[in-house]
Length: 74
Image (cartoon, rainbow, N blue to C red; front, side, top):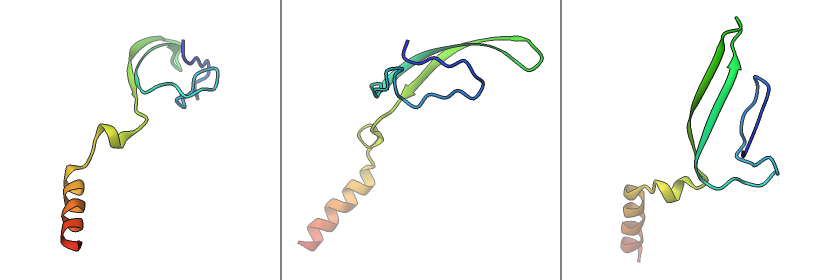
């Protein structure tokens, strides 16, 4: 288990329970709770922790423009 919370205001900051940064990648979650009328909720899924968005999604148009500007300048 990487993280656990038992209050309705819980959120994950990307750190492990030991305080270290969790590595980027998929994390599976399981949520067991009760709503305001007492009905049980049971949910699970995946969240993706992304640490460096630039490596995953470069902007080719911007990269091309910068290369052309350097060529014209010099």
